[in-house]
Image (cartoon, rainbow, N blue to C red; front, side, top):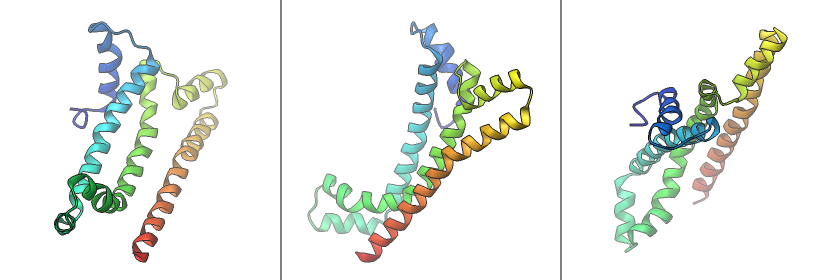
Length: 161
């Protein structure tokens, strides 16, 4: 359900739907719940796909060694899946950061909404939204750098093994 519907709709459903079933939620809570459910569904699918991408022979080899399922996952499969999962996981986390701008629609004051408020006071849209863009970049760029570093470390660890 969460992967098949837009994040904006999910924000609306949580914020306006929760009071219908008896839960009063503030914009902060609604944004947190909607973003968490959305990210959880996508990240779960990313990781499921990465685990399934580990060659079947690795599963069979771990079973042939007599490892139980939990040990197979922890010691053999997940380390290999991690290497596959880093780029799409980080890519999606960057999308989540940028997706927080949609929370302004339910009254949550996040970075883009704060930019709108400042712009309404200063009437300097190019300056204000250029600063907002730089701030989003400064939030997302370190994630990309971290991902590159993790990929290099994982490749180096695999080369040593």
